[in-house]
Length: 538
Image (cartoon, rainbow, N blue to C red; front, side, top):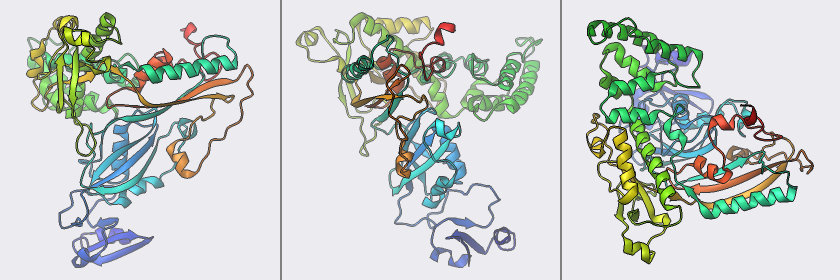
C-alpha cells in the first residue's frame, strides 16, 4: 500500500502523508510547515504503535493552547480502565495518557471532564465511531461504551482532585416499603423519604469502595506506617475472599506456598532463589487488572526479598491509596464514636470546627489537603452561645500537620492507633520518599444540595426509567407504557442530588434506603416481586 511504501526505509526520511476527507495526501518533508496539522501520520511508526504526544514546539501551533479538554462519557467501565482504552483507541502517548479529576464507578453511566496534552481533536473523535448506542447495561448487554465531546483547547489541564462536586441521578427499582400498602400509601411513603433525605443529610462516612473489594487496603496502609513492607505485600498477594478467577486463586496460593520446605531465616540464598522463580511464574498468571500484583512480582523476580523496593514499584497513586485507606478507616471509626456520644445535631465542647476553607483554585477546582483551611477547638462558652452548628464540625484525617479534637473523640482516636501499634508520629516518617501524609479535615455531616426526586410506577422489570446523556444526544426517547396499577405494579424512584468532593453517593443512598449498598447485598435483590425474598434463603 501507499502507507507501507512511505514508511519504508527509502521514503520515510523525506516523505510525509495523512488521511484527509477519505483521500491520502502525500508531500515532501520540506513542505511540512505549510501543511494542515490534522491527523498527521509520519513515516517510521510501526503498524499499531501509538503516536507520540511529545511534539516539538515548532510542530505545535503557537497560538493553540497545550491542553485539549473534553467530556468523557462511559457506560459499564471504570474511569482508570476507560482512560487506558481512550489512550489506546486514540493512539495517544501511553506515558501521558489523559488526565481526569476523579474516579467514576463502573456500574454507573457517567460523564466527566478530562484533558490530554497536545492532541488533535480528530484523534479523540475517532473514538465516537466505535460500536454502541448507549442506554445503560440493559442495552449494551455487558459491553462498555465510550464517547467524547465538548472538545476545546485550554491553557489549563484537568487535575486529580480539581472539582467542586459531583452530580448524581440515580434509579431505585422495585422499592419495597415492607407493608401491603395501597398504591397511594406507597407513593406517599416514598415522597416522605425523599423529603427527609433532602432536609437531614447523612454522616459523611467514607464508602466501602475506599477499602477495596476485599476490604483490606487499610491493612496494607497500616503495615506501611509500621515499616513492615513484607507484611504489606503479603496482604496484597494473599488469597481474596471473593471475586478472583480460578487461575488467579491458584496464582495466589502458589505465592503463599513459595517458601514451603525452606528455612527462610537460615538459608537466605535459597529463599531468594525460590522467591524469584515463583515471582516469574505468578507474573504470567496475573490478569491485566492486577496492576499492583504484577508490579510486585516483576520487582521480586529481579530483586527477591527486597520488599520495600517491590512496594515502591507500585504506582505512586496506588501506594498513596493504601495509606489514605487507613486514614479513612480511622476517620470512620471516630465519626461513629462521635455520633454515638454526642449525637448528630449538636456541637460539643472539644469538637473541631472549620473556620475557613479557601480550598478553591482560580479555575474553580478544589485543591487537596490542608491548603486554605483553618480550624479551632470549640470551648464551653461557644457551645452555650450556639456559635457553631453541626455542619461546621470536622474530624481530622490523621497526618503530620493537623489539629485534633479534645475530649473523648481525641482520646478515642489515640486509643485506636495505640491498639494498632502506631502513634501520630508514624505519619511523619513514612518509609516512602514520594509520599507525604500531612492530613486533612472532613465534615462530620454532609447535606446534599439540589435534591430532586420522582416516584415511578411501571410493570416491566427492565423498563428504563431515565434517559442517559447519549440517548438525549441521539434523540432516543424512553419507550414507556402506563402502569396497570394492579398487584404486579412496581414502584421506583429517580432521585438526583449534588455532593461535595469526596462525599459518597453510596453512603447517601444507605441513609435514604436504610439498606446496605454493598455488591453482595445488591446482587441478592430481585427486580420484581418481593425485593429481598432471597435474603431469607441465604
